[in-house]
Length: 396
Image (cartoon, rainbow, N blue to C red; front, side):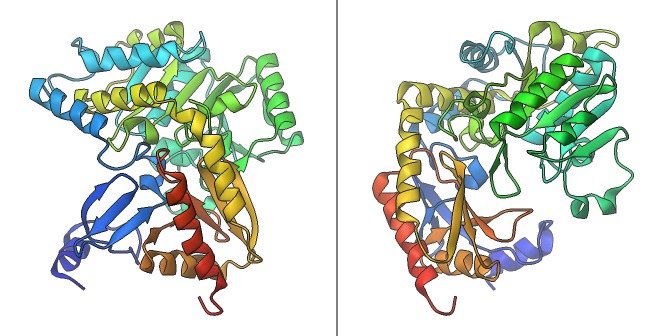
């Protein structure tokens, strides 16, 4: 173990007993380089966060320019700051008419917390319905709507009036009634192997919510900013949320999140009581500048138009007797193996061969593939060959 690794494990709080301990020197484009200048093709993108690759010049320049002007000047919502309002306007320009007003946060989890509070403020109800195997974060509120008891049990009691039902199970939607404030939903479940919500299920969910005046909160944190071949993941469905949460890829590698609704809904956080939802660093001007540059680049360079063909390349190359299926959509793909004993070994051996892959929180049989949206066709081919070579090994 290196001196840096020893300090890292001793002084920096850990989340896992066995971190990979890859020591980073620099990163550029689709590659990360360790302290020995070994390069690794990145099929993780910071778990869907580094959407335009590492050290994207447009993002870096936007950040540098903003730092030269000003950084943090005041708590959120008091001063007019150009990166914030320009980003909010551009988001509104590219969203449905009921999603006009954005509240910026520091992360996706914070966006979920804000959305849950907002739903209660809109209709005065308290029950939140969520789905088994859902993941929305790990703070108290977001943990309360996580669909996996293993990760919740040690932290109970959590928020009351949170009810779990089954994903893609139409009968379970009968739980939605006039006591329900909101249903929180991922159109593609991010922690369980990128399960996609079925059209019939979503149609029935939408119908029951409308019948009972229940709000739909869509967690689009992993699916936003082009990841699934649409600017926002919900656009692959016929559902338009009442509240949308976004984060991860929207920052292009910088920490930012947001929850978005109508002006009428959002305005309820401003009175009775005033300052109904507040944050110090949410909407940090540097992070908003990074997000604005990311969104402009995606739109100008027509990045979204390339996603479908890149998905098809992954599905074309990744064919092997040990691969059961490939789940997900766009560049949000899950490599589903027959044998869960293979998963860790494939990830570890691919890393030795210069390819970075990652796991799913709730699915031991699958490997996460979420490269930068800017990955080249040749880089896709190279990475897939490394995966296939390791699947071919008799002993992984």
